[in-house]
Length: 352
Image 1 (cartoon, rainbow, N blue to C red):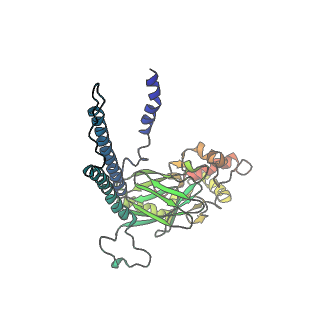
Image 2 (image 1 turned 180 degrees about the horizontal axis):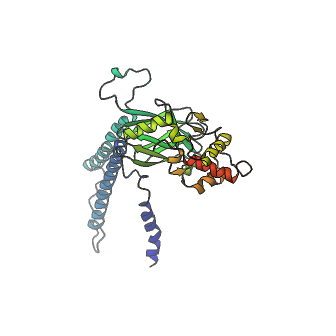
Image 3 (image 1 turned 90 degrees about the vertical axis):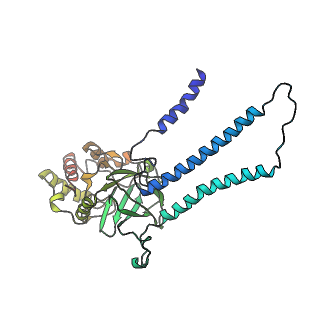
């Protein structure tokens, strides 16, 4: 019984290791980059299993074959200095390392090549295999503690939710505004650092529509673990509508739908527009609010509902320590004004 109790914690660890979100795991690849990386994981795993099986087989054989027996005092044949054996157990590890290294190096070069011509390079000069026809460039900037996504070719600035079209190469240029962050979408692509003053890049594709979870994997401050984002993959037609309305919002979609929401817009313009933008009005200091009503979470991690939105505006520091958003108490925004502000924010959408 005592031995069983000792094994219980380890069994619990193994059980919990299998738990997690469906869209937050590298073990369920959803695109060519993730599949490539998964194949490398599997290859290294198979090699390790092969080595373990061989080593334990030899160990058990030697343990049984050359165990001490009563009355047997002879010394087994010594193999020290046997060139054939030394050649074998030197060559096999080298071959296994080559087997692991070659696909790793090849895939590293493949993943490092975004397929997008560098600035000043004519696409016509590139080989057909090097150039990519359908691609979208996104600049992902890490802030404490939120993500900003700019689409330079489309004139769009978005926050927290990265909208992308399916079956299109997404080239992400990674930057940071303050400290080192790290960009990771487990189901779609591996990790890459966001470093102040340096631009890194990576690429990935999402063949299926859906919402994929993203994380910051670099300890960037007290709320690092809450620095999440979403990748929203939609069909190209829907993305085109989203991009058009984000760049030049349709007034029918962004105009307040009622008297309460109209009052809420006034509250927003008096208190929030210095850090947040709706359409082309406002500041890019904080996340863009043009499509805030379509989000599924608040501040990257809170379930989207009016109570959480109210608590976040009142005291963001208590929910996400270290963030730069100021608190708005009742002396700044009354409860009635808060209700109208939430009504207005909920109405901010660019997709019908």
